[in-house]
Length: 267
Image (cartoon, rainbow, N blue to C red; front, side, top):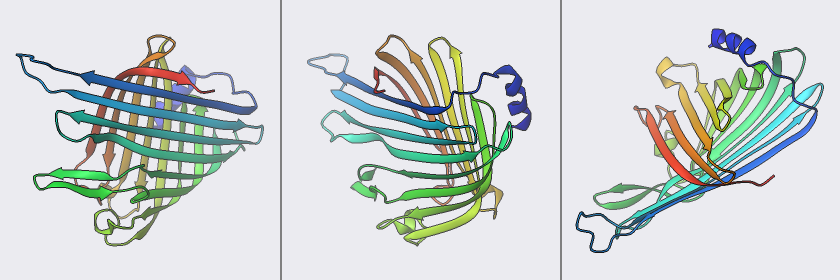
């Protein structure tokens, strides 16, 4: 990873961002629908929609940088006569304050949180079973450490961290029997953003947390988005998320979504 970052330093070097607030808020809405009437080849009526909002608010000054990001995703699907089910549900925010003492290596302090909007269900032969709700669970992490930002496209940081898992009704599933579980360890976050072509952008975020007990208990959240701007208001998104938390499942979790929809820059 270190060699990769050093190589990219020379390949993607750019001018430093201008001082002041840099604000960006993008939203996109995707919708698909299928209807069949006397269709001899078979099929079921279906629809699906998903809303994504991504915001970034960065204050750049000579001695510090304060970066705030927000990600909201929510969507539902319905097939046939079955009830609608949510396909994605995520609220994620992060705030990072970096004090500049050098060109590439600088101390930082950060806070982040992850939860969802609505109740989540596990669908079994016996019916739908509630397994999650808003802030149940909720994950919050605070980190103090050193950040490395060789170029604007690559930012990575590592530090000592505290991670809290809060839950009310699902302590056995998410908190190992505790409604508030606190872990101490190390946290690493790497943000990547590369313009692969004039209208194609890749963004990735790799988050890892370890309580320093066992190597196979490192929590990993790897979010990848490949976006292509077809026209001013039409965008194609390919999103792949890999998640691993041994406290929840011994196997890695994987989510993939390909969507075409409308996009709009709020500001």
